[in-house]
Image (cartoon, rainbow, N blue to C red; front, side, top):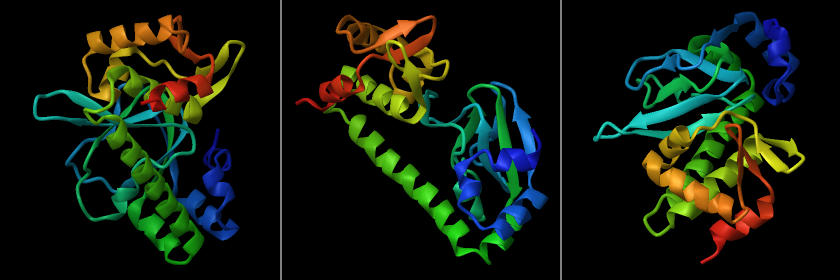
Length: 228
């Protein structure tokens, strides 16, 4: 896959002008990051905007106890780090959750194109606004008033919405989502999440098969985590 094919494989490039697309293709590059490789580190200066073409990348923080908390898991077509447009160090770590192909644009080149294309600027703002909305939902779902099983149910429902594909048993979350990583996303212990996930499977709300998670009925899962 060359850079032009990569660009037009995602919705972002289908929504900007031909002139802007041509300018970005001319200055962009493609990079393959193996699983576990970091695109950038928290507090380091980074001057590159990344867009996922294939695979998934994880944005995570390390808390004061040295525990890892996954904030976002981003897939195909999603902008990774819109905040790069500020002249400040990164505020989060970014790691390839699995082998990932990523579009790279230098900040200076991107700003030059944005100056002549309001729609491009709006798309970047829209992407950042969507992250804010997702973060607000996370804050709600990770409050102490939300039962652990409901937190997991809400997270799996969201992942099935964003990354689900049809499956004969319902909706398959199309990624290798281990219990350890799910615990990182929820800020919980692995043993706790494993126990709560087992309860969800016993209720028929979740199926776990060969390391994959299937949601038999997304509406039923939604009713479960929204119930008082």
